[in-house]
Length: 272
Image (cartoon, rainbow, N blue to C red; front, side, top):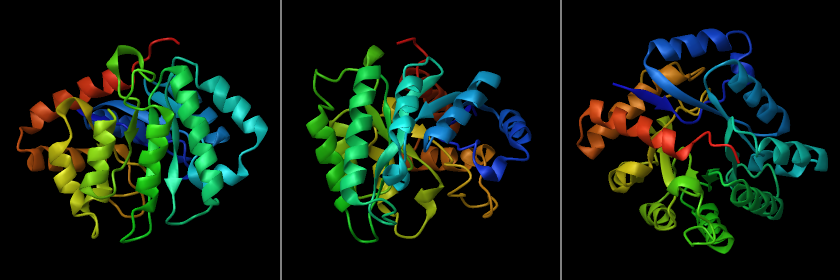
């Protein structure tokens, strides 16, 4: 089965001593595509460095957790990186009302800045979205912001018919996913799908159009069943990919082919 990992923080401290070995193990496990997303200016620059040294991809952005700490200088760097060919997406950004490390108004301003940058660069935006348990306010706010930014309209048409963005490590109710899909977004699934309270995710995995489906680990977080709890890594994306094949009722080999095709279209390295 061919494999991808569309979201792996290999520049994180958890991989400081053995990132090369982790990447080699991923390749040995059959993972053909890996995207390393930034969560702030420094990690975005590190992601680009990894992409330059290996056949992987990077994204650049500021996570909602760090929105309140981002400086003007950080944004100068993010905007510069956004237009480089090896930076294939904008983010990780979004909204996190669960931990609330940054005030909501600051998170919203941070998100809007990323959405505008993604439109300008012609690249998809990687969206993190979490509400407190049993709530959905972050999801509802995210959909409103996407609508206001023009997602799903002719004013926002990334090159090659790519989705304007993707919901990374999906979490939320089915109608939230339906709203995102109606705007043309892709959806990526991680080991979070196996956790208590995420039962709706299986229903969402069944309705995502085949050409807008992705899989990820969110390494070093969100270990799926069977993976070490202390540190997830890309090779464990096989567990989530096999689960996707099962819930969608398709052969694992077929879904692997589809995921590689989707990755190459959504995260194209076309110069901007």
